[in-house]
Image (cartoon, rainbow, N blue to C red; front, top):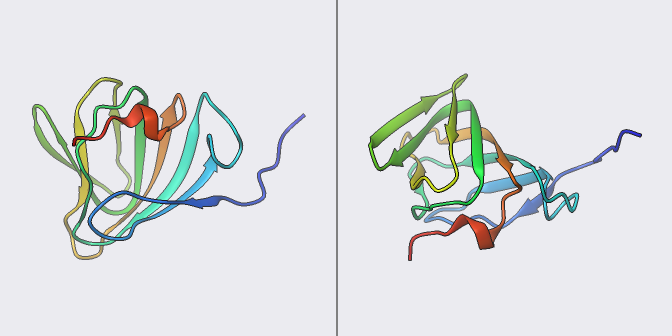
Length: 120
């Protein structure tokens, strides 16, 4: 039987500026362990610590630019583009442009503070 998830839950974000994270599916809202889906909105100039997560993260940018730093360099992901980061790969996300960015992040297995392994 299909499961309706009537609304997301706002979860706390990490970073130098406030970022909105609305989790639709995941460990917090639906108690789902194998996948998480979150809608994110980050302001211009937002950045978070680097991380080496245990999960695969697929990010679809809806508006603005999401910057992804990785061991091989830097890539800017524009609206309509998607970036896939594999488990064990170091990445650091930021939104350098004034208008910020809006995007959807899908993690498999689900995002967890215990498996994101942020830089100290």
